[in-house]
Amino acid sequence: MPQDYRLAPQFAARLLGLTLMGAGLAIVVATVVAVGFITQPVIVSVTVGLALVAILWVIWKLRSGTWVVRLTDDGYKVQFVRGAGVKQARWADVADAVTTEVAGSPCVVLRLKNGGSTTIPVELVAADRDTFVRAIHEQLLKHGKAR
Image (cartoon, rainbow, N blue to C red; front, top):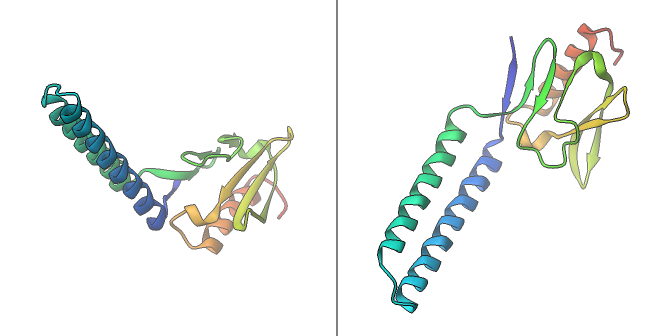
Protein backbone atom coordinates (compact mmCIF):
# COMPACT_ATOMS: atom_id res chain seq x y z
CA MET A 1 0.00 0.00 0.00
CA PRO A 2 1.48 3.39 -0.95
CA GLN A 3 2.44 5.95 1.65
CA ASP A 4 1.59 9.40 0.37
CA TYR A 5 3.12 12.52 1.84
CA ARG A 6 1.26 15.74 1.11
CA LEU A 7 2.58 19.26 0.69
CA ALA A 8 3.26 20.99 4.01
CA PRO A 9 0.55 23.52 4.94
CA GLN A 10 2.89 26.53 4.89
CA PHE A 11 3.88 25.77 1.29
CA ALA A 12 0.28 25.07 0.28
CA ALA A 13 -0.65 28.49 1.67
CA ARG A 14 2.24 30.09 -0.21
CA LEU A 15 1.12 28.43 -3.45
CA LEU A 16 -2.45 29.63 -2.94
CA GLY A 17 -1.18 33.13 -2.15
CA LEU A 18 0.85 33.22 -5.35
CA THR A 19 -2.20 32.08 -7.28
CA LEU A 20 -4.32 34.84 -5.75
CA MET A 21 -1.65 37.44 -6.53
CA GLY A 22 -1.36 36.24 -10.13
CA ALA A 23 -5.13 36.29 -10.56
CA GLY A 24 -5.35 39.80 -9.13
CA LEU A 25 -2.57 41.02 -11.40
CA ALA A 26 -4.26 39.50 -14.45
CA ILE A 27 -7.53 41.24 -13.55
CA VAL A 28 -5.79 44.61 -13.07
CA VAL A 29 -3.98 44.27 -16.41
CA ALA A 30 -7.21 43.31 -18.19
CA THR A 31 -8.99 46.27 -16.62
CA VAL A 32 -6.24 48.71 -17.63
CA VAL A 33 -6.25 47.34 -21.17
CA ALA A 34 -10.04 47.53 -21.40
CA VAL A 35 -10.21 51.10 -20.08
CA GLY A 36 -7.00 52.43 -21.62
CA PHE A 37 -7.60 51.13 -25.10
CA ILE A 38 -11.38 51.38 -24.99
CA THR A 39 -11.85 47.74 -25.87
CA GLN A 40 -14.73 45.49 -25.00
CA PRO A 41 -15.37 45.18 -21.25
CA VAL A 42 -15.96 41.49 -21.85
CA ILE A 43 -12.16 41.12 -21.63
CA VAL A 44 -12.37 41.90 -17.92
CA SER A 45 -15.25 39.48 -17.42
CA VAL A 46 -13.40 36.67 -19.18
CA THR A 47 -10.24 37.38 -17.19
CA VAL A 48 -12.16 37.34 -13.89
CA GLY A 49 -13.78 34.04 -14.90
CA LEU A 50 -10.44 32.47 -15.82
CA ALA A 51 -8.86 33.76 -12.61
CA LEU A 52 -11.67 32.25 -10.56
CA VAL A 53 -11.27 28.92 -12.35
CA ALA A 54 -7.50 28.96 -11.68
CA ILE A 55 -8.03 29.74 -7.98
CA LEU A 56 -10.64 27.01 -7.58
CA TRP A 57 -8.43 24.51 -9.42
CA VAL A 58 -5.48 25.21 -7.09
CA ILE A 59 -7.73 24.92 -4.03
CA TRP A 60 -9.16 21.63 -5.32
CA LYS A 61 -5.68 20.21 -6.03
CA LEU A 62 -4.47 21.18 -2.56
CA ARG A 63 -7.56 19.81 -0.78
CA SER A 64 -7.88 16.59 -2.79
CA GLY A 65 -4.83 15.03 -1.23
CA THR A 66 -2.29 15.79 -3.90
CA TRP A 67 0.91 14.16 -2.77
CA VAL A 68 4.49 15.36 -3.03
CA VAL A 69 6.22 12.06 -2.23
CA ARG A 70 4.78 8.59 -2.70
CA LEU A 71 6.54 5.55 -1.25
CA THR A 72 5.42 2.15 -2.50
CA ASP A 73 6.77 -1.36 -2.07
CA ASP A 74 8.34 -1.09 -5.53
CA GLY A 75 9.85 2.39 -5.38
CA TYR A 76 9.20 6.07 -4.90
CA LYS A 77 7.86 9.03 -6.87
CA VAL A 78 8.35 12.74 -6.27
CA GLN A 79 6.26 15.50 -7.83
CA PHE A 80 6.04 19.29 -7.49
CA VAL A 81 9.67 19.53 -6.28
CA ARG A 82 11.85 21.62 -8.55
CA GLY A 83 15.43 20.46 -8.59
CA ALA A 84 14.60 17.06 -7.12
CA GLY A 85 16.71 15.32 -9.75
CA VAL A 86 15.43 11.86 -10.59
CA LYS A 87 11.68 12.02 -9.92
CA GLN A 88 11.08 8.28 -9.54
CA ALA A 89 13.03 5.08 -9.13
CA ARG A 90 12.70 1.53 -7.90
CA TRP A 91 14.10 0.68 -4.47
CA ALA A 92 16.36 -1.85 -6.21
CA ASP A 93 18.04 1.09 -7.99
CA VAL A 94 18.74 3.03 -4.79
CA ALA A 95 22.28 2.71 -3.45
CA ASP A 96 21.62 4.54 -0.18
CA ALA A 97 19.86 7.46 1.47
CA VAL A 98 21.49 10.27 3.42
CA THR A 99 20.23 13.31 5.24
CA THR A 100 21.94 16.59 4.52
CA GLU A 101 21.32 20.30 4.14
CA VAL A 102 20.91 21.95 0.76
CA ALA A 103 20.80 25.76 0.78
CA GLY A 104 20.06 25.69 4.50
CA SER A 105 17.12 23.28 4.22
CA PRO A 106 17.21 19.75 5.63
CA CYS A 107 16.89 17.21 2.82
CA VAL A 108 16.86 13.49 2.21
CA VAL A 109 19.02 12.50 -0.74
CA LEU A 110 18.38 9.12 -2.33
CA ARG A 111 21.52 8.21 -4.23
CA LEU A 112 21.01 5.84 -7.12
CA LYS A 113 23.35 3.14 -8.37
CA ASN A 114 23.60 4.77 -11.80
CA GLY A 115 24.98 8.00 -10.30
CA GLY A 116 21.74 9.95 -10.24
CA SER A 117 20.04 11.18 -7.10
CA THR A 118 16.75 12.46 -5.76
CA THR A 119 16.76 15.36 -3.33
CA ILE A 120 13.66 15.81 -1.19
CA PRO A 121 13.46 18.91 1.02
CA VAL A 122 11.91 17.55 4.21
CA GLU A 123 10.24 20.89 4.97
CA LEU A 124 8.00 20.44 1.90
CA VAL A 125 6.49 17.25 3.31
CA ALA A 126 3.52 17.45 5.67
CA ALA A 127 4.95 14.91 8.09
CA ASP A 128 7.27 14.77 11.02
CA ARG A 129 10.85 14.85 9.73
CA ASP A 130 11.97 11.79 11.68
CA THR A 131 8.88 9.80 10.68
CA PHE A 132 9.45 10.57 7.00
CA VAL A 133 13.14 9.63 7.12
CA ARG A 134 12.31 6.46 9.08
CA ALA A 135 9.73 5.43 6.42
CA ILE A 136 12.38 5.76 3.70
CA HIS A 137 14.91 3.77 5.71
CA GLU A 138 12.33 1.06 6.41
CA GLN A 139 11.71 0.70 2.67
CA LEU A 140 15.45 0.45 2.06
CA LEU A 141 15.81 -2.18 4.78
CA LYS A 142 12.96 -4.22 3.23
CA HIS A 143 14.96 -4.29 0.02
CA GLY A 144 18.24 -5.34 1.62
CA LYS A 145 19.86 -1.91 1.79
CA ALA A 146 21.96 -1.13 4.84
CA ARG A 147 21.21 2.03 6.75
